[in-house]
Length: 436
Image (cartoon, rainbow, N blue to C red):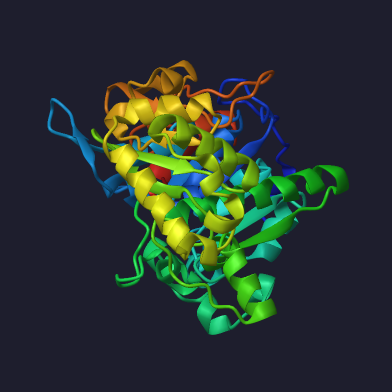
């Protein structure tokens, strides 16, 4: 693919040019061509931290993420995807036809975006075959760029593996299944279970973000970019590491587990008089504090329930004395309120909390005082919406949520004019040719 002369002569424009200046990543520019959910969430995090993020969506219908519910129905009857709005916040959105093999103007705009960016997040899978985009061309245009490639199975040309698997499509469910996660998280008497809330996608996005930032730091030192090959199934499997190391080194296949831990106690979600409460004690120090708390509450003799005989091993937990302790614990918790259990455990520094519901969390003073719920104007919805705040917190360079989601391609002209130096007449012609 030849490089257009306009791109060859284009000069880099420092960021931020189109977004506010704030946060630890101010000065970074990120291009995103990802969709639902693993692709765009990493750039959302970077945008929360101050990076200038440009998200490309298809002309006409926009990003398919916009069709994912639940929806906010506006007064004029429009359906606004709330998951999309949350993940589209802080970003600039432009439309662009990415079929570069068929469209010279499309190729010129896309390569201009590549030249102006520090990182590019994509999860298009069939990048070369369907879109005509090669890594050779990308690095010729911008040798310093970091390309974060997110896919279900990884790309054999970058990270190894079977080429036929690299071509396979994937969703959150598929990545979870191939990683083995549904088998691990299911209860002993249930079929394999999908972890809801697109958990696999979000885990993948977190690893993609970490990998992208690591490669970015290296590129700043060396002047050389690279591909970060993020396989969804590997990102999920990485958090299952103890299952793999147990089997690889000792031939141990760890069994499925209920909420209650099998090898120590107490560690479970218990039914209280008015709700559910989690109590955990691991190791002799915390266990002994728990026994003192339970002794105050029930009058038991702490010396009767030593850690070694009641909680140190699976055999101790399953012993007659271990089961007796479990029964006493459950009975006392069931007869008291969640607050009473929390207060007693806090008195003895035993980890404990109520099981929060969403309606509890949004009104809990600790959540609220940590600024976990913020507001921003959403141009697509035409009103101010509430969002989850920035995580983690920065003491010197705080992140922020400065906008919600825009309409389809809401920033296209702004990006073309101010970043890529297109004139009004050139933009009009791009629209006529359905490039944007």
